Length: 290
Image 1 (cartoon, helix red, strand yellow):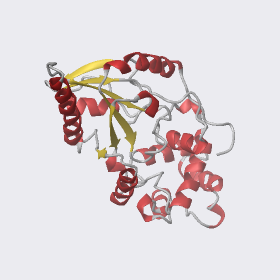
Image 2 (cartoon, rainbow, N blue to C red; image 1 turned 90 degrees about the horizontal axis):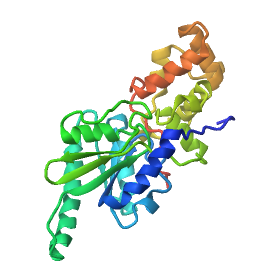
Image 3 (cartoon, rainbow, N blue to C red; image 1 turned 45 degrees about the vertical axis):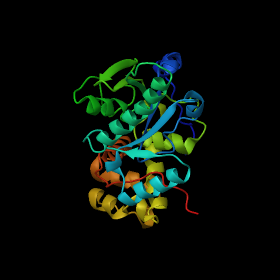
């Protein structure tokens, strides 16, 4: 990515982190939610410090947006690092029951310790934590089986912490998305921009679209990525070869065809199509091949 660098740390994110720190002592379990397309970029660098001494459940959301091969590769990668994952599609409800069961099992362990100390059992208190727009609120609504918190596929919808009761076994704390104050890894920042996990004011849409096209060209060699360049060619009518192989030229040529030469509009259309799965199921990140 060329300059300017991608940075996004609005005031409500900073306030959310302050609220989060004040409530960490109240929770037993941290349910961390990441995006299946970018499971590394949506991992917070301060997470281990925040969850010290607490149980940790890693939920990979939007499993529908990646290929089965990508999911298998990531499951093996996390397993090799002794990290159990639960994969779900919070929007459709797939895998949500497994998330609930894993959280309740954590509560069983908590209450076993309480009983051993002569204390009465209580619901497990779980915090849902993750970057903006990874599906935390959608997951809570699915768990509770009704819309109890606002949910939308854009960053910054949840702005305050809220407790939600899930039966007699689980209390959930829905927290706003959190980000590190600086995005030092600009490749990860690009991935966040592509997946709409940071505000659009933080990046140049045309530069991000060009970087996306280059990423697709680089990823097509790995079948698990799901990248099929012919999908772009068929959708937009512009080949990804010859004079249009360069992302900037491809974007300009395609803009002439679809948006009367408006490359900004064409860039936004390309990004929207990716986010709506109109280009297929695409993983922007895969485990490094050994």
